[in-house]
Image 1 (cartoon, helix red, strand yellow):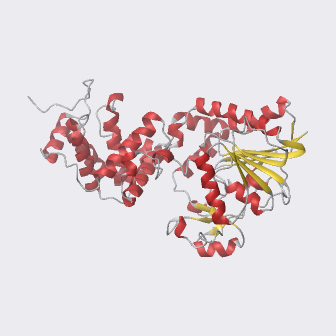
Image 2: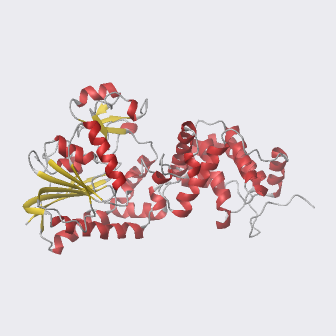
Image 3: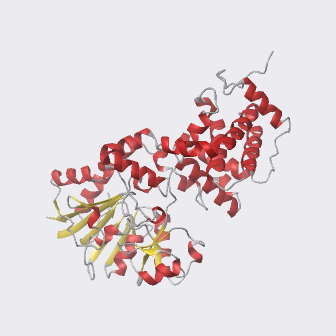
Length: 471
């Protein structure tokens, strides 16, 4: 009898019998080597990829250095960086990777082969997008497969598929990238409905690029752009395409001369206007970038957040920056401030769909149901915040979502609800560098905006901001 194809638990063949036989001859009978250098990092990457894809677990929490996944925390710093690089590539190019792997399989992997799929995706991300030798990516994936009882009998398949991928990548990768959107259907569909096909295509293309790092500086942006090796954006933020050191090692960090803050996230605080000497609340404040802007502008700021750990981080940031704010731990929906405020900035919890360039897990951990649930919460937060304002006081609502349910349509619903808030439209010329993002009196940025000539330095997080006045 000839060589039989590997099959899943459901009996479905994965690759042809001949391909499997060749792969088995190549891998040989060698046992798994659990101490193989680099294996722990690849196993952690596959485990975290499973948590993102199968359990919709946000990547930030999984890779938190203190509270993240135990397999990740057990790694050395260099291996942690490799895991993050693998996961960013595996998520950023998930549809492209899936298409190229599928060409090597006789039938798609069924649902009960999830572990095998994650091993293949982790290795493929290295072969296609990282500076890792193909042989190392293949060999470690085979060793990983041999070490797991669920995949040990597919080690030959893993070897054959990945070797074929490495051989064909030079001619196949670019056409595959051109054919794929690298976004789940629900996400691409909602973007297209909101922005049209052409603009959506530009947004998704920007999501494939590594994000730059933006800085809000206390003074002299030009000088800090030169010292940090970046440029000054039209909105005044300093942008660096690629950092040459970790943030705490950069010039100006210890002195508190700047803080890391996406250029789009730096815009909403500016929409409050002149806040010098005014009593201002920053709601959902942590980690405090917007609070720092308000304090630097001379406001008497009350920073409110429901997370004690995030408020500790805010306090640490303010100590480094040499700024002051009243810090309050409270749930906005239950909080009763002792006196009303002149102005409020509410940067509300959202789906974060505007941050995909920095967080490529977002489209894979969110859903339309999550978007609508968060939009409902945001409306409740706006209505609660309105009660904290003095008559005539100004409320700026913002979030980092691209979805109109959390932005344009929410603004319309609030204005129609009669909750004591009137529209306070943002006028052209009010804030330097934002006129191109104004839309019907509100602010809307997308990753396709702010083209400065170099894709690596262009684009913004997707942000929405609307301004209201207390009647």
